[in-house]
Each structure stands twice: as C-alpha cells, then as structure tokens.
Image (cartoon, rainbow, N blue to C red; front, side):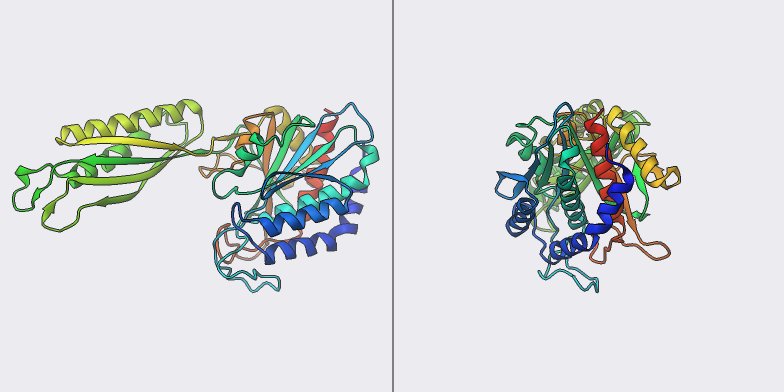
Length: 394
C-alpha cells in the first residue's frame, strides 16, 4: 500500500492548488439544488484529472477513478456542495461574492479536500485495486440530496462497498478529528397539529370550545413525553416552534395550528415518540371538548456508523495524527446529517475534522462569522486517502 509519507508529500505539493480551489468555491456559494456553477467547476477539475464523470442529478456530479488492478473493495468518498442563505460577516480576502449567501457550514472545505484527494489518488491509480467514486452531492442542507443521489444510482456501476464522509467541526482545533461509534446524528421528523373547537364571543366562553386553551394544554402535555414515555438513556427532543390561532382578541378561537420537530436516534424511540405525540394531542383535545389531528412529514433518518468501518477510521486516525489528537464524542448530535442515507444502504462511517483556530474565538457553523483554519484540509485529505486505501484492502 502507498505510504503515509508519500501521501503527505503529495498533499504538500498540491496544497496551494487546494487552497485556490477552496477560495473559488467560497466566493461562489450556491444553495441546495441551485449548485449549477459549482457542479460545472467540479466536473471540469475532475475531467482534467482524467476521471470519468456522471451527473445523476442536475446539480450532483460523480467522479469515477478506475483502477489498474482488481481484487479490492470499491470505496466512495462524499462531499456535500451546497451553501446557506447566510450573510457573510467575515473579512476574508476570498469572502462570498453573493450577497446573502455563504458557505457557512464549511462545505467548500469538504469539496476542496475531496478534489485534492481525487487528484492525489489519480496520480496513484497504478496502486489501486478497485475503483474509487467521488460523490459531490447537492442539497444536504435542504431536502436530503443523498437520498436522491442513491435513488439515481450513485452507489451502483461500479457497486460501492463502503462510503466515507466527514464534517468540519470548529469546536475542535485543527489537527484533531472527532469520532463516535454508533449513532452520530438524530433523525428528524416534522409534525403539524390542528386543533378544532367552536367559535363564540369572548364574553360568553361557555358557548364555545376554546381552541387556544386546548392547544396550550397540548403544548404543555407534550413536554412530558420525553421525560415520562422515553427511556432516559435514549436521546429524544420534541420541539413545538409554531403556534397560530385566533383572529380577534374578543373572539373564542375555533381553530389552532401547532408545528414542530421531533429528533430521535433509534427506530424504536422514533416510533414510540410519534405514537405518544398523536395520543397526547388527541386525548388532551378531547378532554377539553375539542378535537386534534396530527400529520407527520418524515425527514432525515438517524446517521449510524458501522463498527467495522469505524475501527478502520479510528486506526487510520491514530496512525495519521496520533491518539492524543483523537476526540471520542460521548453523545450523538441531535442535529441531522443526510449522510445517514448512505449508511442506511451499505456499511459506512462519518467523522468530524477539527477546523477551529487555537487561542481565539471560533464561531460555529451556520454563523455569518464562521471561519475555518485551512490547515485542517491537510488532515481531511490524509484521513480520506489513508482510510480509503485501508478499506479497499480490508
């Protein structure tokens, strides 16, 4: 197998090119399913490397590096490519040129690192024993581009054995990686509750059924689901963030609308929480003389790492950056990550690359002042290449 030292030399050789790529991408942010310029730029670079390209989606592109030899496993490496509708507040020389839009989640870092990874592996194709697929996926921030990429066949022809992905993490310093076995991110389900009562004059509440009061009781009762119906060691968050009702201050409202989000990890808890939310809303409304109906809109599934693939990621991290620079995450994030759809199809792993500056304040992702220490790109590329090569031979 290619040595780590050889890869490090290649990273150093291409570092300035990788930074130029990152700066171009940062200056040209595009939101989910609008990444036309981004996709064209990526495809151009992949073709210049001698890779075959495919476009399974209008703004999704795959680079395929065919191997000279056979016998290994086909590995896919994924980078999400969409930006956010966030106004950039940094003073970077390569700050966004699109007012109101920014790569505030670091996807420009993901793309630059993966393009450098593709370039290095292209140089080393004589050493590969199986194809490598580079998945540049749209709409991670919106409607789950990963699921649509899979439906469009991104894991087929050649068939992928494992997928690797990561996300930048400004809460950890550059030069570190954070790992977690099992669940790394929660599932996400949206829900709407409609409460129906009966309208009357505010002076005569006994002649009506107050949908505002019934809905308020539902909001309060729902808070007990997590504390009293879910296993205490299993993460679950239920948030009602929207409450609309009434048209006048002196009229008993006959209708109220609630909307919220449910975050869980295990399928059992997801099912249980949905069931109890429906039962609670309907039961409380009935007790108030009203009625309630609950509608769910499924979102991302929970992201769960495969233990055997994570073993190789952890082994690679120890060899590349040393045990002292590995952070083991104790808890999953209750945020979502559509990499979960890849993990739901084949054994895969997702990790985190520290991008925080040492000895200074680091703004979090999705903030207009988010910045990333670009030295973390070296770590990302080294981890991607060395883990890919190990998995190929596993």
